Image (tube, rainbow, N blue to C red):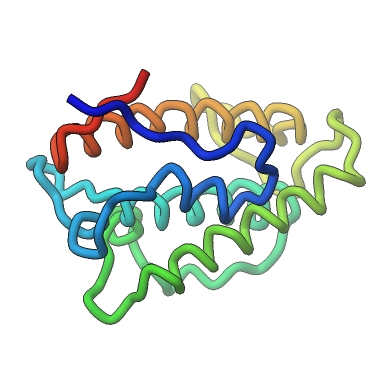
Length: 158
């Protein structure tokens, strides 16, 4: 089995990094699922953008976010035939840039504008907590990419 090629370790452009890690997958493979859940690499990118939009823009910043697209939590994993890879990557990049801008000026102990419910209690999480929550979510999904890539073309991670 071939090992997953990695982009340069000094690359700091989020879009280039994402494309570097998805590099080698065809448009068909980015949209192809080999698991019962219907998971696809491109669907995961869409989900991560939706996740960041919810936690950063909606919950933390308190923005009015239009949730009619993609609709339900299940739909944020699905890539419609008319959705292009470029559009989904641009959506992801936009959410990343928004988070980076906010992180540059927001103290970590700042409380979120909206609450989240944990264990039956509503709480305003700190910005630090939101960022760690996103980091663990992204890390968990990174494992999905390794498994998905291996199923698609036999390439494995280190």
